[in-house]
Length: 604
Ligand code: 9MR
Figure 1: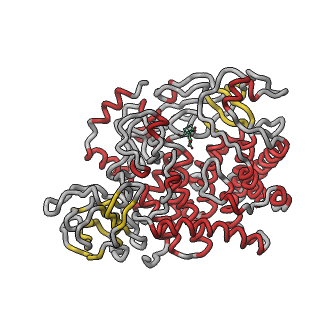
Figure 2: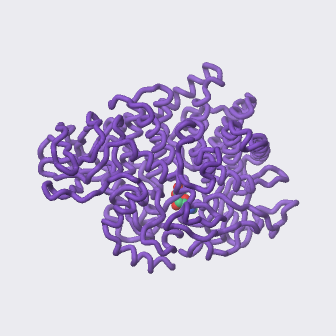
Figure 3: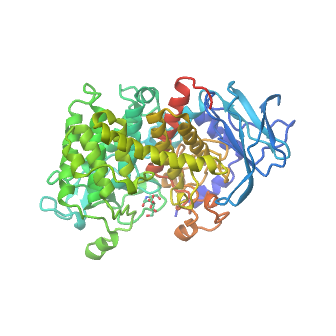
């Protein structure tokens, strides 16, 4: 491992330096020093470390308060601007905390810098009420994808201190024996450049690229005006496409090369045989392979190509011919998957039959009914042919769940609900009802848990739990869009707050954005550069009570689900970063900013 030197360097980074990063990145004046007139920052007050839009809900969680009142004071002069009463005390089994209360100061809409003061507990860090905080988060998390780009150098103009050389050109990738076909026997070299690194590792996986790319394209599709104004300072900025679309297309271009033109099947992943050491991208030159075509990868590919075709059709002058060729690619993939419904990815079986052994991430999914439904939905919307929905009807009531890389059936519902006017009234209402039903159950949890968030089940705290929170938020946003009931938006906002500070760990889980952020993510580019701070704008996996058994890292502060998070490089089961975790927080922060920021809405 080569990360040790930098790990040591990072331990001397001061709190002040971290704040400087936050400021330069989030452009919001969070995290200033506490004035001497009031108590030092209380760790028992947890709230968004970014701040709030004037019209948005504003809630903090207070643990262990004796009194039941709170005040909001000006950050500089400590003048009281609002007084309120804490909600009744509750406990939260998932964090082991007793006496958890909430301070709701949504009524305060005047822009400024404030602190929350709770008698006997102390004062919170300073936070901002103003127009900028969520936009800064949306920009940062979208920019995170730029930093994950393979094959191109990251120039200082765009990457600042995190500029680096190009890694992994992937222009001479070997066809692994598991992927051999008559026209491409094992050992054939193919070119498969571009796309994003999946996570803290340097491999590229179609399954995980599917949901990640979808979530960014969904933002472009659902919030076109907002997306057009969202500038992330990437090489394509200013090219007449929204930056989020440029970013998504950077990965779409790679995904297309993963399709075998001879039969339409899509390779499961492009990978090293084993994970790279913690070396910088350009130093990692081990041979790369495309492995086995899989049903799941091919269907996820079909879904994203069909969706992308729909989105780019709006830019015929900038992207001539692209919509049609993406649709053809989607159709060819769909046909292959129908002919190969059982080509599941099973790495041990693959390794028993072929060499070299492949040891990298599996994204092995044994149930592909949801992938069929998702691909069918996107193909129907793009081609307007009913036959897709006949082949894989979208409504399967027993499997409506929060989306994840292995469960994409709800994405079919999201897309179909968005375009419900293209469906029969009966089908549309069934789909909308299913989606709203899911959101209702999430809102119920948010209404009853001590933290007021939808993360309420033990099972929510899994590997990548932060993406569970973000995807719950994405589902809640859909329900709001379908009903205009602001209680859904409020619950979505609560989950976003959770991710950036309103949680028992006290971290904002996005690198570089907030006052206490991960410094040692399991992320090879961050560990192998000379910059003390990790690459910014990346959402870490988050609390995962199984993490110690999974990554064997020691030092987890607790085994309680909501507290089992460790900011250490070894903790790949709680502190890695991944594109499928960044995509839903980019979507969520942008959607919430668009909803609460675009037109002033009365705070609920
Ligand atoms: O996000 C994935 C998680 O759901 C799985 O439990 C875990 C173990 O299989 O793998 C995670 O994905 C990793 C992938 O396999 C390789 N790149 C890093 C990903 C994030 O940890």
